Length: 210
Image (cartoon, rainbow, N blue to C red):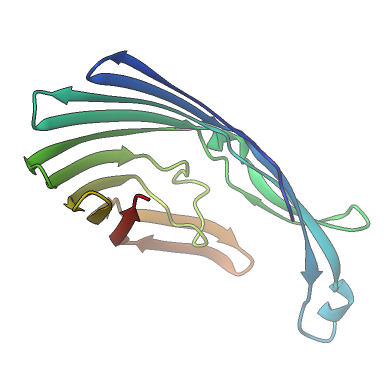
């Protein structure tokens, strides 16, 4: 589907060394369309077109950036995301009959992040970041489709200015993800399990001024 939303933002220079930013991203509605296909002689009669509606959440971010002397810059942000809008994923036939319903019962989340930059020399800047990103899922309704849990981000990076025009940024982040459990009712009984997750992210960026 194609959805439409909008972003709003404001940046205020409070002092020569401190600025505060506020940003809002709207929610977006989608109506997904597809075809349900079942295997087996008796199940083939259940085949047909289906639809599912979903509303991705809105988010609001508040951030602060401040210089601490000549070499150190500190920053922090809070991001509130309205995941509580997603209670279930319901799939309907075009006739209006409910085909399936997966309960999610997600909750709103508040992500907290802090960071710092250190100017090693006029051309080199070291970066550091730490964030806690809670999951919107819960232990009762969590599914193996999205075995998410609370995440702690730890990130390092370096920025190097190549003359007056070019800048290179290299960053690395590791996500420490809490083990998640799944205990769902299924047609043949219950699906019970534990997931161990983690993530490593390496990024390289080059920007050039003309």
